[in-house]
Picture 1 (tube, rainbow, N blue to C red):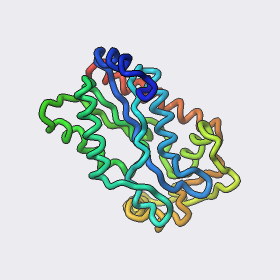
Picture 2: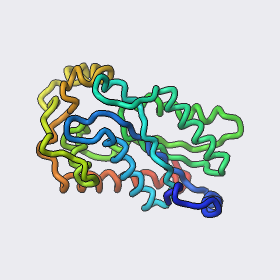
Picture 3: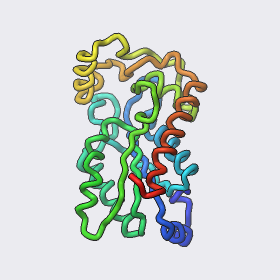
Amino acid sequence: MIVRDLVNTDILKLTKRRSVALIPVGSIEQHGPHLPVSTDSDIVSYIARQVSEKNGFLLLPTLQYGVSFEHHPFFNLSVSSPTLEKILVELCVSLSKNHVDRVIILNGHHGNLDALKKLSGRVSKKIGVRQHIIVYSYWHFMKRVFDHAGFVETSIMLAISDKVLMNKAEKGLIPDSLSKSKLNRLSKKANKSFISVTKNGVWGDPTRATRKDGKAILNEIISNLVKESQTCLTGIG
């Protein structure tokens, strides 16, 4: 149920049934030479809509801006972690005032994690607010190792978008052959300056990505998320 498409009276009826609200959070940032800067927001919006439809959640509009300063000097439209956290806290409080006491935050960008990790605790300190908040990052619901504009993200985008420029896809940093210690060092460095590590803004190899693979990855993520988020419907967890 897409909240932005509903009228007030319908929403008021729905919130009387102990509804669950789902808030997708993405980013606007570079994704190599072949994917749009909206990639994170596009993917998390698609997954959130599928999960919401299957579980009957109230789907809120995607927060398109995330914490992506690490992609400078390549393009990014970023907010700080405290700003993103404040926005989400206020949205949760607003939902509480509208009798929605269960909220799922579905994250689509790694840089948002710091803003999300203390969210539940921040909301619980608000007077008069009793709310159950769960934070998920969608890549935790697939077996493949996640990337940035590599095989996984490119395959998913091929399955949901016509904005992929496969003729411009090029390999970036390939982590497969790196030792765990070197990979950890590079990951920490990338969190501060992604371009210093990847050069072209790509972590992985998108050149063999396919729409078929994207559909399979999405099916896995959505299926696992639907099952996991059932805890919000039952009040368990």
